[in-house]
Length: 629
Image 1: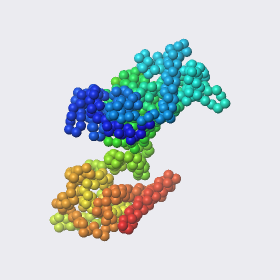
Image 2 (image 1 turned 30 degrees about the vertical axis):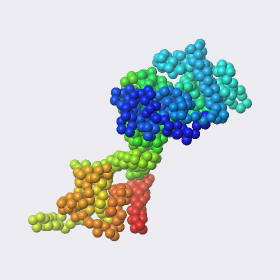
Image 3 (image 1 turned 120 degrees about the vertical axis):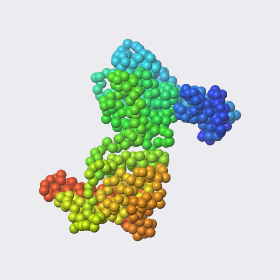
Image 4 (image 1 turned 45 degrees about the vertical axis):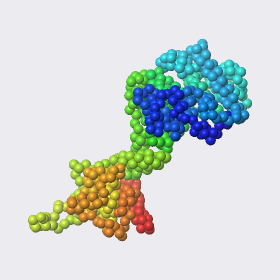
């Protein structure tokens, strides 16, 4: 049939969805919509809504969603064309005339389905016959029940190059090659693809056999792959097919859980343990199409990966492919099994209850992303930590949905801030601020106070380094503090980083500490109103702190930051925190190379020199770029 999208849209528009569903389900009016108890899962209170204006139904309990055609195919169990024809009769429309080419393709597909059904019968007969003893023994060692063996349709392919070819000769060699059952090699007769293997049929969503998977049984064939799947055919696209989806979808809608494991034998093992909502990809990493199919069933499938290196690689690939597809209410849960174990191992050694407990403890997608990137490389140097931040930002940029992208970025950067800039411990001794040695000062009673005791030479040198750097950074720090006053919502976002700023005359007077304290007390957060600038200035003034006014902003070297530029403030704080630390580390490295010059100490000294130059270059570029505006 030649059914254009326009014709199908007209069919949907002419169909009263509430009337259609109301033929078999009791529906009640609720405002502009209709409600009912969901027919896809058992429930006592209605969570199933029908919207005639928009032409779709949706269940907030199990996630069932679709239009009139999908209702007829999923609930009524009709093939697509039969559903279309029945709806066309109800809508008073004529189905377009048959397309000869489409009819030919449909006939060819029907013949291929017949071929695959015949091959399945052949494999099942061989499992029960004399030649299937080794396969039956293997199934017994796995502990699969008879019911599971029959439900999943286990079979056996004889170790022969022509057994299936002869048994299915009525379909013709070309048909068997097209179905992926025979291998055709130039200059040789076609031969059976599956030989000496335990066989499992692979079905489409309507339960028709479209491909096979075979597990080798003979240990001597060390050069043969352990598992072998059918190639892509007109019926089978391994990147779009999920093994066992036709059986797993109904119980998954009822429980709200879909479990994705790595292989089809894992699916069978879980079914044998009473977990029926399991599916698996077929020889490839989870694809975008497969993720979309999972979300059609449940909003948050559970991805269960083996605890080996291959399982971890599969988890990373799944994360990468899922991020661009994220949409409101849809995500993934990630479960990693103990090292060296697969689902069958867990069930056999710890029992089904332990497997259920592991599936219930899956981590969210954002938590899995954070753990994966955090553990991907060492985090011993500032450069390592900067690399982590870059990886996190790049990962979030792949998310297409703007709200989810923004929320992921904020959450991950908050985690990064807690890791890279741990909060200052109030009980820990603080590094003294650098001030020039004084000759003496007058105390509150008018008497001269003696000078403070001198610092040890080494500490004095280090403090002098910090003081010199902070003098250089004084205009930038002043601009940052004014920028935070101009936009108090930014205080909490950067609070943990600012707590690491080295002491200086701009921090010793209490302005920075007061900003951090007031930000925490009054919830100066991006998502809430927090403090207004006028309130913040008043509270600072009540503490005896002098706050510059807007007139003082004009002509500042970093005026754009002082006016509350978020990106400028973030970059400035990074420089203010890191540059003094790099200067201190460089001073220590210089001293070390003077006493003991080694290849390692020289390399570290050069690394710090390059980092110092890079930070100062960023500082200079920031000023020049904004000065030109």
